[in-house]
Image (cartoon, rainbow, N blue to C red; front, side):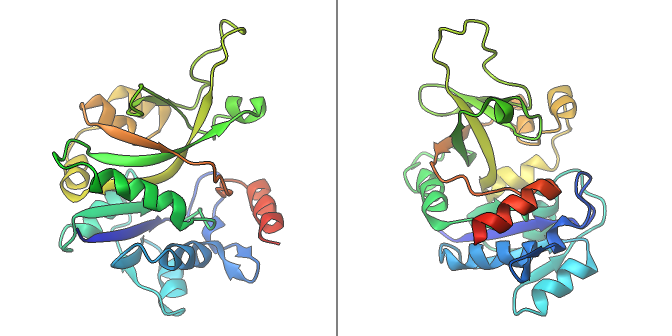
Length: 242
């Protein structure tokens, strides 16, 4: 089974423009993410896929591998699918460019989903981490996920799910970490499926898979790290790096 990693990287992020080129302990966020992904030693190849000359040069000039993609893509999955179409592989792992604390233990758990899926019933796998801070549960930048008894995703939302109508129910809340592992054919199919209203409303791309009946296996991890969505997140990351 040939496994590669693709890191989609746009320069003009809406909430924090240029965040991937911000300095994190002497290196850019995107370079930190690339190096962390390579360091897991789980992948045959690791590529940054970008529409930005700045990000492309940053990776290539530091000895990494980068692919230039079209400017206009609706999602990171679309950007990766364009790049991976002519690459020989079985599993494609999408690591977000703003995840400099990417680590091998959690990724290995995700990849084991496919190694144990002899009937190829799982289309993609992803990570979730339990959250208990009510501010984070209510934060729309934090995507929540609910699962069935076998940890297949039922729904993703920016709202608190489940809604805590009965405060005596000891509900657990899980944050979706933006790492996906796809079967290559499922990823390529994604790009030709039209966006439906649930995805359009929430602006969460993996909802598209659920709307079309695909199966997403969620894997729980206790390792959270910091996703850099805002300048405040960058300051948290700097402290954590120390």
